[in-house]
Image 1 (cartoon, helix red, strand yellow):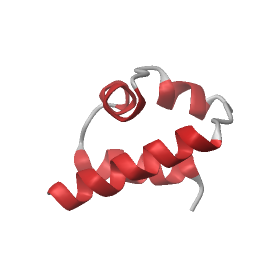
Image 2: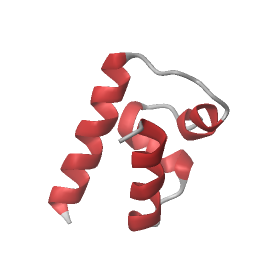
Image 3: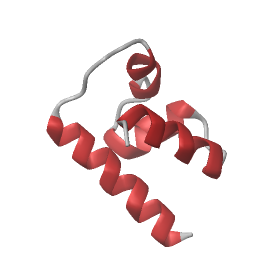
Image 4: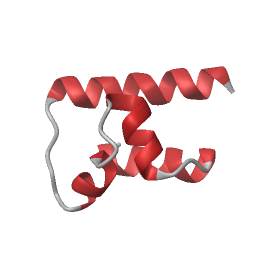
Amino acid sequence: MHLLSMIERYLSESGIPPSRFGRDAVGDPGLVSTLRRGREPRDSTVRRIADYIRAARAAR
């Protein structure tokens, strides 16, 4: 699944704002907005985001 699609789905499920997601996942409150504008993150950032989403879902 494309990273942005995965994030958008998680945002919809969780109801948290994009800025909080970015801050909690990778320490960047502007993450989602820059991804929406076409930013291509590093592989390590993609892994951190995927790990964050997996852990957050498991905790619920």
